[in-house]
Length: 431
Image (cartoon, rainbow, N blue to C red):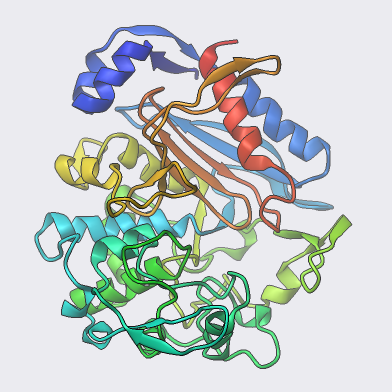
């Protein structure tokens, strides 16, 4: 099955008018996937990963194209299929953000509502005076809002960020969502449950004043705690009721229901020193029962396991601006809002990008032709990636969505995201 693309003008009009108008636009040429297939084949042939899969979707009816290569484990394993299970890590964040946006649509939440309305422990937050020197703090000048959680502008941080005094406190208290017990180092606290984690965070100062800068953080995990408190049930049940059930994502959750379908994940660097390795080492021995049994900390920021078949359904819903299989999962206006730049005024991601609900939003068209072929991305491209190099993209200008699943760490050991961006550009250009 080949994908189709619209003319550039048609795509621009369709992006503004929505999926119904997009389906009325004349088709100009077929969107090829030669370069994408060649890319994942090369990653397997070079031994970077044992296997990989990509799902490609166009607007409207859900008819994904699956491109696969290799097997699920080095030295053996099953042939990679749409039902192979993968750790998507931070690709959990868009799922949590869209679950929050569903509650915005019902009026139970508002983007600029203080989260202390639902989580009162966050009512009187403090902000660090000097994040590099210690935990001395002053009262925050403004509250944390729902918008801040969805866009990493709440002033929170991450234990995986550079190791300052506040990050060390996160580790001491076990605030490492998306991790598993086997990853913890001596002196680091045990992972709490989600509500306990929120309580610990509320008792610590913020790294930054809310709404003033983008800082990668546990904000989407706090958003998960907010959903639990708002709905009155655990986060896995919130997901099942709002997204996974309606979208038919039966294999997606916080642990692999069928461990035999689980792909291997591999370190290409020494976990302690970060030094590159010539040969990969499997992560699974450190995970022990991580990702194969119900975790104590349900991490909406980094704890989900999914298949390409399942995540493609979520991506299709986003590409269709809230619709899937003829059913409205998210109201159209709310979906457009989720796909818009939600950053506070004057704040940018990476200096020039915006940020939608849980994912990057490109603000400028950077497409160009060079000696190596077309490259860059159009404006309005939305998506996010995971620590093991999974990737999710929704391109409303070129009219497709893409989900890529493969497993290697650390992120960027091989340049998969820029490689995929170039492959998508080459295929969209028609070569």
